[in-house]
Image (cartoon, rainbow, N blue to C red; front, side, top):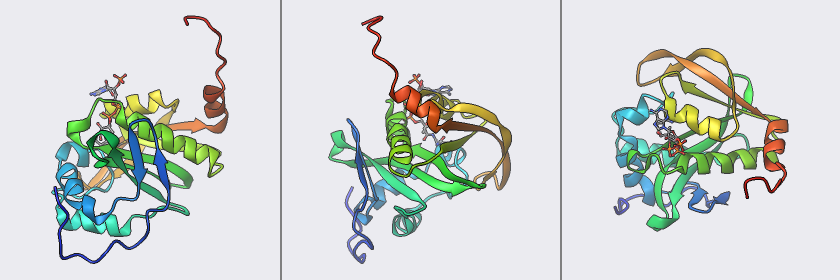
Length: 200
Ligand SMILES: CC(C)(COP(=O)(O)OP(=O)(O)OC[C@H]1O[C@@H](n2cnc3c(N)ncnc32)[C@H](O)[C@@H]1OP(=O)(O)O)[C@@H](O)C(=O)NCCC(=O)NCCS
């Protein structure tokens, strides 16, 4: 997919870039807009996020790209797959919400589901939050119906922290959500798990 040609240049330089074995997490740029629009225009994505417009067009993608904040309080990064010449496959971010400073959010385009990509991106952002932003804890929410997102959070070491209601632009109202949290002490423990030799 090519970028629309009659657009002004991107607003900001890339800034933060996080690399994982399969992914590059970086600010999305205007050249990504058509891929962003194609993957975001999916009811199965929108219904699980709090504020993704649906239907979702190129103008939505360009507005998202132009308004993306990469620090100092909101960290929104495009997820790009190295295997596909760094093609955009989703979004992961950390943002303040409901009195919490570090709330993790993410989505992956449907063709790329169930390859462990959300988990890989989320783990990188969690490491970033604890090691670079000195977060005391990272929070997340998922709709009670969202088993895949719950599983991602479990694989990242999050613990269940109760139920609540959260906004849904797609449903034009509030929907039941589960809350999750990982404390710094748990993250430190997971990172330091001793190499026991058992099962090696
Ligand atoms: C949730 C989402 C981000 C997961 O992305 P992903 O890259 O497929 O996630 P991963 O591959 O890292 O992990 C998915 C896990 O969920 C499991 N899973 C998939 N569908 C599931 C379901 N319906 N119920 C329970 N588990 C499910 C997978 O088997 C996998 O677990 P495993 O590794 O133990 O097998 C993706 O489906 C998505 O973007 N959905 C729409 C938007 C969204 O829900 N965002 C999160 C908002 S809280």
